[in-house]
Length: 267
Length: 323
Image 1 (cartoon, rainbow over the protein chains, first blue to last red):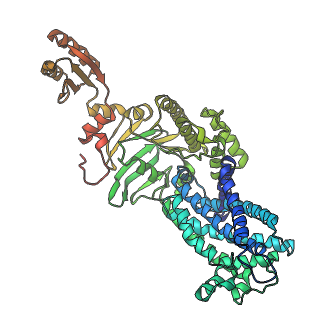
Image 2: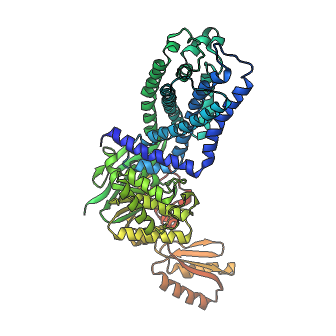
Image 3: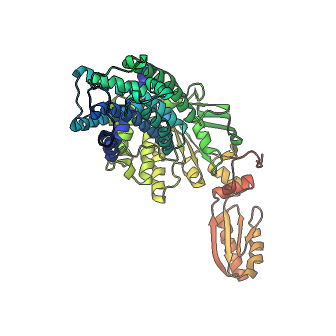
């Protein structure tokens, strides 16, 4: 068996183990699902009256793609916290004494978090539909948007996996991630139009991958209201630009995390 | 008989602390070696190096003929490890824990399920098998962990303090299970803080302190080195202490120790010495509050081998180690 095949089969065994926790501690799932729903409702009704996006589209319709992007990026925190928790527990010694793939724990964790993201996207979409969001493009495009969101989330998971292996306890992951994830998601077009930023901040917004995944989703869901994308290559080609980020993040953080895992587990 | 575990001059540092200072071990096939020592002596570090969880800084080791540094995965295929802290997933049931381990050993799903049921049955966990292991008692968790180490029926088993923290009943159950395993030909390395445990389970004992072996032999050989059994007498009146010291001195192998009204000494033939001492005390009219024959404990072994108490031992490179 090649090492990649073994990483995948062992990773799937570990992912199944992670998912059993949903069955045993359903409370975890409740919070995974409630917080995005809360975000949809909060933003839609708190900012909905104050912000009016350009183009023929209401704020709720503008907002949903942004909330999707924000939630899946936040979801990566689970990956980091989950790994940090694994590293503290006795089970990691069992894994390390088995002739299994050394990356299976990482592959398993990032894979099981895709399932969390699928569930939270599903619940957010349903909440969105209830408050007035509509998919105006084709079903195929909408599916593509969801896939792109999941793929982007998967790559961010690997960043947080690395963070989770660096820090001493799961709590630190939560705090550390806020410092990075809040600026990334708020200094973007997720909640306010890119046009409302100036200068350096505007440049950051235009090239922030959270903006481009949001832009890509809006276009694929048909939620732009005919408003043309901002004049930047990244925003003009949001799908390609986002995919480039996904590849870049994975190329950097998969090896980094694997190396950190090996280092952390041979202390 | 070939050595299933062999370590030569294993060295491991943690920053400036020396955990292993050149440890040599050999465990012939089908035998049990107990690594006996207090907390911080380097037992767990030794086990982790042999089980490929740690890379040693110096020396070499092979397990089932496979080098632990050159081919760690080869070693992992041939060992079962059960640690001091049960390595089970608390959200998974006993059955799920074992099938997961089986599949990570590369077993087909069906085979891993059969094996899990077999092991649950063998370790008396059938009733608890479908409950999350979180609900298990300490002893059950430890048995599940041991079952996890046996999933692939490895030829070499490494147990790190398998009974530390267990109550008397759970400890005895564990001993029974381990004895059965050894009976079926598994080579076993176990670490323990209890001489009694090493005595019951092991063919050979290596006493470890400050990261190196300070004595080796069978339990009887070690006890003989330690001075065998001890007679302890507690008298009612302080004035009798001197008499007891004199009478016990006749049988004592070394010095007679006096602590307040308690007098003790290592003796050769404990039962005979005790009988004669009691007769003598009776003749002298000494009123005795308590008298007993004590087998040497780890503390005694330690005191005699190192000159310091087991519980005051620290891992470090500054303490004296007798040749």
